[in-house]
Length: 220
Image (cartoon, rainbow, N blue to C red; front, side, top):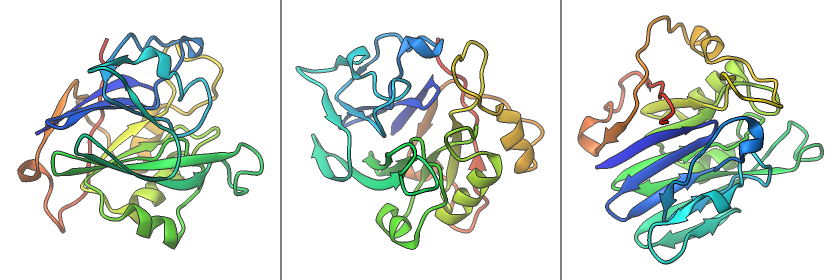
């Protein structure tokens, strides 16, 4: 059983039997407070203050393993693959590179897109592979917006999509679209935010079923 908590912006805490992973921890300068969460592993998609505040994460054991680039990693039974992508539509010429992470935890495959700013190539899709849970930026600005996010979801075809990186009260310094624009793009009118999500292979949507969109409320 893998437990998911949303810590705000592009930061999630994934807890399974083999460890705890935190994705893209952010700095208080963006107007939100991450607190001091614990983890064994931290993934950093790119080195901007709203995605790489590793110092905010307390070690769950003796140290935190930081993963901040493409490659294949195994940490205490947690398998992670970093896939090179870009933070702009010009192959990184404007804003640099971005790493997408595929995280295997408790028989669930998570994929965190970081600040992806383009649709994926065939090679990138092959490296990502099959995905159970996709964390996708939907607010636009320096990442994909609502329409592009819908296209990337269609490319990856995950079982579950959890949107992230959109406008919220208190967020400063970023011109992002609100979540409702993404939900409108997908024709979703009614939803109930989840504060915590627990998943295993048996409660995922089956192959051939429609992708499930789950909105998560950041924990306080």
